Length: 255
Image (cartoon, rainbow, N blue to C red):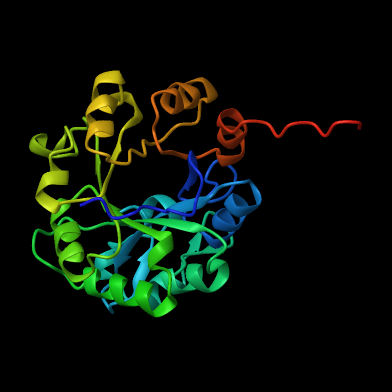
């Protein structure tokens, strides 16, 4: 554990949740570019394997909510997915598209979306792509599911990982308190912001575990979390939250 996480990036970090999703359609190239322009340090995004093996940037298991079409992402080919429009004229991107567009301009929190307990190939595909692009120092790989994280860490121990958790009924009860970090041996944790308090942060500071809660769009809540010494925040409103938690630059004397 304790891989250095973004050692060259000053804390606190601001990551745009699925891009600047308060202003642009989530997980699209325009949302990621807006996050960059809005002052985010990085973007949080979701990846899945489609049926033909490409790494698709998409959150939901099905395309229904975002495209108006019907189908399960993992059962559709890239040819099928590439024809769909997301909330108007936006398109579903591949992870290669995101890296091509943004390169080293931003940092990345890449969430693996899979329900499977056994390796699916997404771990190898993601690790190989990160290494081929020379982006290992700019990436955190995360998931609610500790099993792909454990496999990814086995294959690529040099790339930091983080378990995500909340009290949601969608999360298996044994994982709701962050126990997945011990299964996967992750370097960081990403709790629902409502689970972050003084006691939990004391424990994390003692173990030197970076803490990056989600999803915070309220400036007062952002300031509370930073006062507790969270390392970064994930937000739909990166410009607003960055302004709330970053110290203003001192005025130039004599101006």
